[in-house]
Length: 475
Image 1 (cartoon, one colour):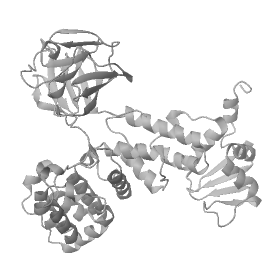
Image 2 (image 1 turned 60 degrees about the horizontal axis):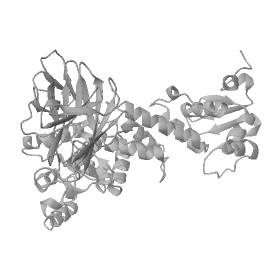
Image 3 (image 1 turned 135 degrees about the vertical axis):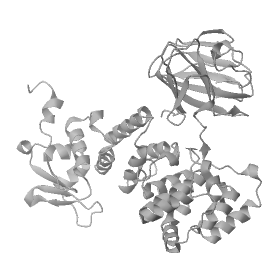
Image 4 (image 1 turned 30 degrees about the horizontal axis):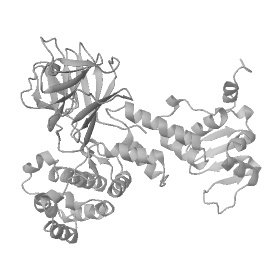
């Protein structure tokens, strides 16, 4: 029924030929319909297009054809333009309207028509999607599309969000084809300039770059370099990396050049350069020689194999856990799938020592009968017995109570399935605090002067399922 909701009534006008007086021809040749007055009132760009016309030399490459009452948009696809029309007519967009297929096109169109609030909404929606879909977000594909649309500016929140999201994913788990060569090049250029969390050792950066380029050269090149460039864990399996097909190596080397200038060879172990990289003949001898020369001037302690801020190894340790605990998704998930006579503990591979502040998230995918999150000292921890009753375990439970040596108190409201617990371990002060579902709580006052070497730990009751991941900051 009309006349009740202005937003609903205006939605009837969207892309409706009956109520339109102008046609919009998009890049993909799809025709959309609009109302001149509404478009001009809501966007200064549309106002100039419709009522002032455009010079032929306009850098936006948009022309007005008043005789035919249409506007041609040769750089904007209809899937992005449809979102813009929805926003122009109603002043809002439903979050479910934005998908991985249209979100970059919509941002591009919003950027062109100077709709800053729509840009902010798209950025916020992308951020929420990346944070919620922590198992396998679409940030590699989105960054690739963003770069290819050439929307790059110095202060784009969406641009920064996508770079930071991809930087925290180890490249060797991103399937080849999800991140484009131009997307990878932009990622490497940003992370070589700015110090930000980064998950991939520099050798793996080079490996991914070479294989991605080789895949573009040919299937034979892709297969050849996949065999010659293993992951760090499998380097010892390579005996002779040389490739007889010199035309192939030259072609790959040429295509690799735009990426090479953003790879820090100083962060790659010298032995890997000698045994693996140099024999492949895809990096110029000048670069290799310069790296050797610089390495002779530095001690090993001066080097770090990861650019930026290394991300802690947030995976559970299969060799340090109680019986019946299953470790899934390459170490990200720990679960106890059967009833047991007691809790079972598992610690992470991440070591907390020296100075600094360490943070990580534990997601309660299933609380089961009970679940506890915290830290432990490796000495004398019994993995088959509740960590909260041991003097080397300090944990917070789903009932909002913290415990160590079976002593503790209430700390926060209870939490359950879907809760996100952030552990803040300050090794400078040897104190620990927790954030539960976005609310930061104070340090546990009884846990002072904790040991100088600790590990993340969880205690699981039966049917509990907990995921660990690097902490993702809001804002």
